[in-house]
Length: 82
Ligand SMILES: [Zn+2]
Image (cartoon, rainbow, N blue to C red; front, side, top):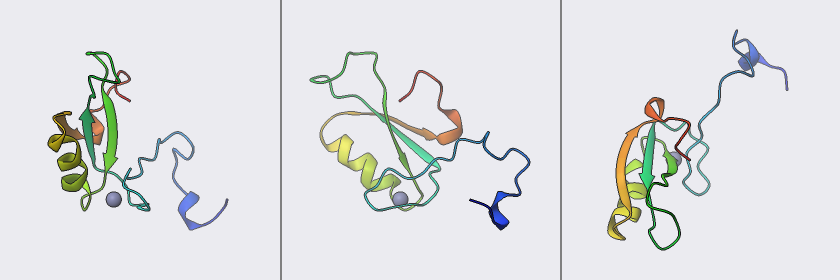
């Protein structure tokens, strides 16, 4: 797809982060890190990406279930997260 948005010098190299909220296509700025002990091993870090608008609702969703580990900036994610 070519257009005015394809002028980035790092085109194709940047991993675009999109919000995980249903139907949302906004760029994610937060990462909600969580773990469900019934489904995941203790060291596993599941990540939901969230835009500014959805960070609270996504974090609250897992926090209510006791699954929330932390909320970090998207830039702070490591290869171990996912
Ligand atoms: Zn969103």
